[in-house]
Length: 587
Ligand code: ASP
Ligand code: MG
Image 1 (cartoon, rainbow, N blue to C red):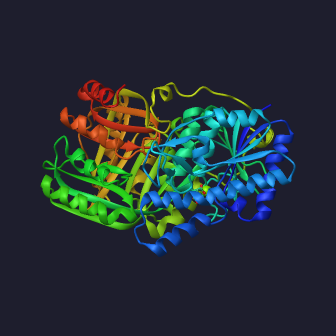
Image 2 (tube, rainbow, N blue to C red; image 1 turned 60 degrees about the horizontal axis):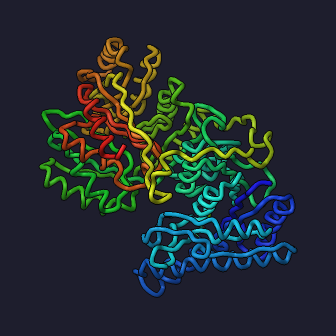
Image 3 (tube, rainbow, N blue to C red; image 1 turned 30 degrees about the horizontal axis):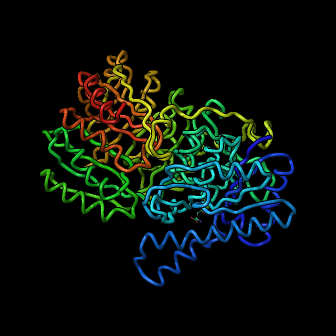
């Protein structure tokens, strides 16, 4: 007998007929002998309707009353869902978030789950009932109703599956699963039979849309297998599991964040601590900074570029301009018509030439790459928004993502094989289930940093460089390209320190052919902080800039992903930086 959590999204319960159809799925499962918990969203676009209604009363509804209002959507659907099950002859009981005991913090409209009590639900399940739980809502310590943020029912479902130690969490939705890229942008997109938590985390937060990113954080932290599948078609869906159980390929998907803006703080005096002075006020304003790139200081002045969602540009510019004055920077520039295209895959860490292939595909389309950052499982490029669709298509084709692969979800049956993997150790130390979970900080002192300055800012340059690097079998780890200024770009990457001499030689030749310069090639140390929630918790990057700045450590490169934060510092400062960071993150 298995325990199953089934979640039905708004489109799956949009009307009475659909509710009954969904209820049949739960009943069938229950008749098969499983314990069933159902999580439902509000019917159809009900949440939008309620938001709109509030706006008709006031432009600035209070967050507490918003939660009171929005939570009614789910209260309607759980009651109807329970009635539907009862009409099919089974016993069901609906529960609100408060009745279940989903305790959250008090951040109305985007509350985080702190704990969930299981006793009540377990008893109902043991009594043979199907439990219908309202998604998206909880209750804070003062008894106020809270909501988890738009799309939050996924998070309720996976969190419930986690605490109930469910065998699988099935997400029923209006698409057939997780795709290699958004099928609305690229019809050639293909459903993936399986994908790893880390890849899904990246894709979800990079705009893949299928699932609420925080739900995947729960799935990873607690090892919950998640199956995303269609409510309306009986097809296998996509299984989200730990990396070793997902099919491995260099690239699993291409994600597009269409509405990005770039800001550059120009000519900042190059001292430890300037990153902190910039990113700390941005974090306290609640602005999620995404790509961060700092170029090499010239005559003691460096540029710091970063991206933010276009909606946050005005506010981010205000903050940046104020910081520019304080730091004595020479100026602030920005561009609000950018898009970020990322390729994601756990397999790319093992395979050479993935970045080169991506850059080549873009260059063949004449797309100019403005900024680049990479992590172990992701390569992101910032390009003009007008090129976005073309870029997605080119990257998708370059990695042959339209080619079908063996459908492991199909061959293993529709349900995930039960594996109750143990939760991360670190989770036990957390106060709230959704707190940032930093697992470890590691030091790798075996790299060297190659930097080209004065590369021409034209399409194809990055592709050329990495083609040549690849030909010489140099293994490249991190890649960063800063925002070009005055028609010249700066490109940095790390290679194994043992290959330093060869890298200098190859880089010298590349530079010469393009009128660029290779800066001196220092040995560097890379520090990696790993965990869950690194990007969804605002200001994590800043928690690292502050103590490093105080310790007088200059950060050469940074890259962030959902599960990792990398910084590169001078090799001599590696050990000291490790100490500083371990302390900062309580490790
Ligand atoms: N009903 C909420 C929303 O529309 C939660 C959800 O659907 O997941 O955002
Ligand atoms: Mg949804």
